[in-house]
Image (cartoon, rainbow, N blue to C red; front, side, top):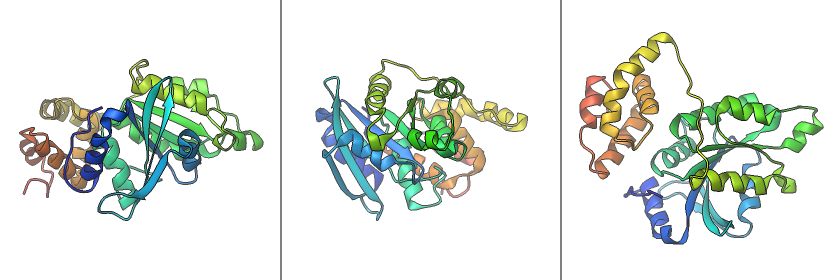
Length: 267
């Protein structure tokens, strides 16, 4: 697992995780909207093997736990509940930064089966960042009670990622979730997330910019996702990315950012 960033905030936490790297086989991010039963999933997976505190330099709660499956040790990081990774709040920033810069071996997104459409926004955003995404479709018992049917096989086919139905309060589906995490995190199974397509003009802009972005990033981030952030003019994430690249001794990001007029990142 490649947790190499240093400094304050997210980097301090990653440095702490690095110190336990020899004791774990994989680090897993657990994301999801509020009120999806994410904490119940976290508790169901880790049991009493967990620790709660604050993210370094922030008032955002940090929960970290561990479990074993098939003789492998997994560290699970419970990210703050959020509806988006576009970082309009401290919670969103922490979730986004860990998924982007923490390089987790897999990211599990917990969704509420009773209101799947609303929850899919976060799922799709995570899929744009990392191929190692798993959808934990929780509260299936509530969906059944409300006579809501979800075709998990079809959903998995449409998204291109593993979909695991669970009812975490009753510990239903958690063994299957552990197995899906094992396969994705340790490379036994390759996910192929659906690539979201945008308007013709946006796709043309992506095609123009992405090769240069890929050349700079050298595979450290999803170049299509970074290109979209450049087109959005998302100065916060680009500034964080530049800091990360500096720490990784990767040259050249400022040239692209200036060329495409991302204001406030290259001063």
